[in-house]
Every structure is written in structure tokens, then in C-alpha cells.
Amino acid sequence: MNQVIIPIKAGRRQRAKIKGRTPDPKALKEVRALLGDAPRRRDLLIEHLHKIQDRYAQLSAAHLVALAAEMKLALAEVYEVASFYHHFDVNKEGGAAPAAITVRVCESLSCSMAGAKDLLEKLPAVLGRAVRVIPAPCVGRCESAPVAVIGQNPLAHATLDGVKKLVAAKALKTKPGKYIAYAEYRKNGGYLLLQQCLAGKRDYRKLTQAMEDSGLRGLGGAGFPAGRKWKLVRAEPEPRLLAVNIDEGEPGTFKDRYYLERDPHRFLEGALIAAWTAGIAEVYIYLRDEYAGCRAILEKEIAALKADPPCALPPLHLRRGAGAYICGEESAMIESIEGKRGMPRLRPPYVAELGLFGRPTLEHNMETLHWVREILERGAAWFAGHGRHGRKGLRSFSVSGRVNKPGVHLAPAGITATELIEEYCGGMLAGHRFYAYLPGGASGGILPASMGDIPLDFDTLQPYGCFIGSAAVIILSDRDRASDAARNMMKFFSEESCGQCTPCRVGTAKALKLLDEPKWNQALLTELAQVMIDASICGLGQAAPNPVLSVMKYFPQELA
Image (tube, rainbow, N blue to C red; front, side, top):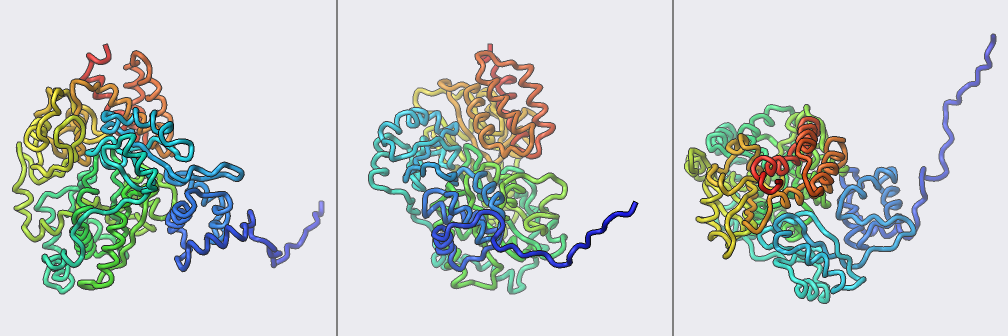
């Protein structure tokens, strides 16, 4: 049977209009004015979304359509990124605009213990309908619990009157405190070591070896040896990149903010030395959006560094997070830097091989880089010479909860929780008895006070089903319950799961329902925990069950 063959024309008819929705001319003009001369690259999508959010306190449908057209992206692509992050208020067409002022009340464990629930219940009536009051995950100020954030202005030890006064004054921006600025840092010997490196007076092999000999490990929580990481990345093909992780969203930790607010150039020099040693072409710094004060400092000080460079510098890029705990995971952070949803990647390949923009990437926590200059100037033996109970090095412990002196305490690695409380934190609050502690923030498990003599360091807590992570230590007293702490943490994980994998997305939600029951189904919780540990893609789902498992193992009296 003969078939009719219809010839296909070589040329295609050109579309008269842009595919998809036509942008509103007014909205397009507004978006173009906000973006100015900034590149329309895909990786800058989140930065551009921030500009719209900051200016209009929302992301309207019209502005999203205009941004998509301006960046030559599909609207669905822009929408899925905007709707992923907590700090973007996506307003669908026809929807009511959010209140002009938003007050976020931290409801993480330390703030909950200090009265956050009472603030959340009473503030709406005090502030009225013109102000939006919403709960927030940890804002990285656990030493000042409870914390409320008015716009981008955090209020320590928040009270109803304190929040009301800031709202009335429309004090929506934070003002950085006193810190060591560029001129002072240079005056006191800053960047001399970096100058020596680029002048050929230092050998990168010796610097790498010194870092290995010091025993410095990744202080973001993973604990991978820093010097070894430099060596591995340098062995990869060029160009290589550096991604600095300052998205410290783990409830209980605030050490990175503490150091940034005081001595930003010590970290910047450390980052540039690491970049030189590992043969890095460009540096990307990812800062959590909750740290608006730190962002103002870094913007100013990076500009000062570029205006008067001590030597040749690689390109430095400061990128702003948008409220997503998951972006503390290294591959999720890299996705976010690329302007995407912060969803962890499957590994292998590892980011050292295939990371940011498909290039070998050196990923470091901010505090790790903070110590680089100190170690290389004083020698590896200086850092390794600290420690207790057979451990080596120093640790910056973020301590919060029922102690007299919460805050960042620099102490020997291997110090115990009991020693930390008595020697550095001024003991327990009056009328409170040491009952339990979280050695590594939300995901590090919970231990009873009777086990307060375990050295706090990498590898020392794993036999007990816990880990130190970023050294976020939360102290509970006899007025608290470990089971309530576990429930608080699971609520956090359920809300912060990126949703990519079923074991984490469904598992955290199911676990939270089980924890809300009057009597825990321990057999089912144990089975569910094992599935989450075995099958979750990243550390969020894998570690989320730790507090629950700890309560069942070490606090049976609470479940009787």
C-alpha cells in the first residue's frame, strides 16, 4: 500500500510572542529597574528574587512573570525556586498582599524553653492585624533566647513590650556592632601571610602538611580533615572552585555568626589562603539570610578588600540564602548557589570531584577557615597541643539552655559537658539541676546528665548513638523533658525536609504524629527510624531520628 509522504519544511514559523504569559509592562519596568546592570544569569535567580522581595515585601505573580521574561526562563522554573524558600512570600494572582511588617518568633528548642510559645500566642493581639506574626526555625541566636526578628532586625531576650516598641518605630534593619575592619586588620599584620603565599615565599605543600599535622577537621559538623581536603581538591583538574558554607541552621549553633560579627577578615584571609593552596579559581561565600548584620559587614569589608587589595585576588562572590535549613548540606548549598532549589545531590560523585557549576569544589565551613591563619602562624603543634581526655585541638562550643553563661565558649577538644557547664558556663541556673544535654544540636542526639563525663569531640559520641556535629550544646534541667525536646526537634525536621526523598519527607511527618500520641509506639518508631537512616538521601533524614532513639534508650522513665 502506497503511503502519502508529506514533506517537512526546513524552516519553522517564528512565534510572534514570547512563549508563556506576556509580562505586564509596569511590572517588567519595575523588575528591570531593580536588576539594573546586574547579569541575567541563571545562577543569580535567587539574588534577583531577593531584590524584589526586599523592595515589595512579596513576590507578586506579575513580578515573577516579568522576572522570568527578563531572565529568559520558564515561569515554572522561577516559581518552583521562589516557593521552595521560607523567606520568599509568593503571592498568587488575586491574593492579598502580606502585612508590611513580619515578626518571626524563633521556636527552636532553646527559644521554646525560654518562652517562645507565649510570645507567639500573645503577639498577634498586641501588634494588631497590620503585623504578621509567624513561627520561625532557629535564627542562630540561641544564647539570647527567646528571639524575635522584626523584619530583618533580631531582638534578643524578646518580650511583648520590646517587640511592640521596635514595630512602632519600624526598626526593621539590624545595625552591626563594633568589629575589626579592614584597615585595623591590615595594621595588625592581616594578609601578610597571604602576601607571602602569592610572592612565592610559602610552599603550598608545606602549608597543606601543617594543616594536616594540626588535626583541624571540618567544623561545620562533618569533621573531614581540612588539610586532606585541600590535597584532594588540588589533585582535580582546573578550574577549581571554593564554596564557603555559612548557612549554620542547626538549632543550637551560632559560632559562625559570633566570629563573623567580630573579625570577618580573619575568615576571609583563611579562605584566600585555602584558595591559593588548593589552586582555586573563584570563591563563593554562601551566607544564611537570617544573618542580615553579617551580610552588611561582609558586603562592606569585601568591597574594602577589593578596593585596596594586598595582592592579586581571585573573584569573590557573596551569595544570600533564603531560609532553608537543608542548604547547610554541602550539595544543597551548591544547588542554591546555582540559583536552584536547595535539594541534596546523590553521591558519588562528591563535590570535590563534581561540585559547583560542574567543577571540582573545595567546600568549607566558615569557622574552619577562621583558624587557618592562626594555625599557620603559630604552627600545627600550637593547635594540636590543646585538648583533654586524649583529644587534640580547640572547639568553639555554642552553649544554650539552662546555664548562667550561654554563648560561644572556646574550650579544649574533649572537654566533657559537666566540665563545660562548671568551668565555662558559670554553672546551672539557680534552682535548676543538670538533667540532660544535646551534644550536637538538633540532630546530635540527647544524653542524660549521668553521661555528662563523655569527652565532647569527633568520634567520641558515636558509640552512644550521638555526635558532636557543629558543637552546639543545649543544656536541659530537671524542669525539662527529653521527650519534649525530641518532639520539638522532629517538628523542625518535618518542616525543613526538602521533600525530595520519601523516607525523609514522609518519615519525619509520620514520626511527629507518633510522638504526639499519649503513649509512644516504640516498636513502630524504631522501625521507622531505621528506614529513615538507611534510605534517606542526606544527613537530615538520616539523623532526624537520633533524638527519638536517644529518649527511648536513655530516658525510659519519661515513657513509662
